[in-house]
Length: 135
Image (cartoon, rainbow, N blue to C red):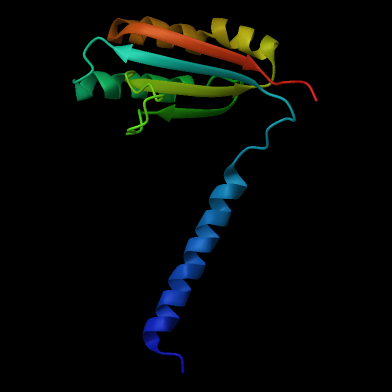
C-alpha cells in the first residue's frame, strides 16, 4: 500500500535526482587533455574572515577569464592524515586547454586586475602547473 508519506518521499527523491541531472548537464565538457593550474594562497591574516572572503570574491571574478574551462575555489578540508598539508588559506584550481591558454591567462586583463586588487591579502603563493601524461 502506498501512503502519503511514501508518495511524498518518492516525489522528493525524484526531484533530487532531477536536480542532480540538471547540475550535471551544466558541467562543461572538457577536452581529452587539459592543462591544470593549481594555486595555494596563504593569507597575511588567516584568521580574518573578511580577508578570506575578499580573496574568494576576487577569485570568483577571475573565473570570468575566457581561457578558463573550469575552476574550483577551495578551503582546506579537515584531515588527521599526516600527509595532508592544510596550512594554506584558499586554493584555486583551474583547467585550461593547454600551455598556450595558460600563458594567455597569465596576461589576461582579468588576471592582472585580480593580482593588483588581491595580492596585498596574501603572504605566500605556491603554484603547481601540470600537463596531462600522454597516452
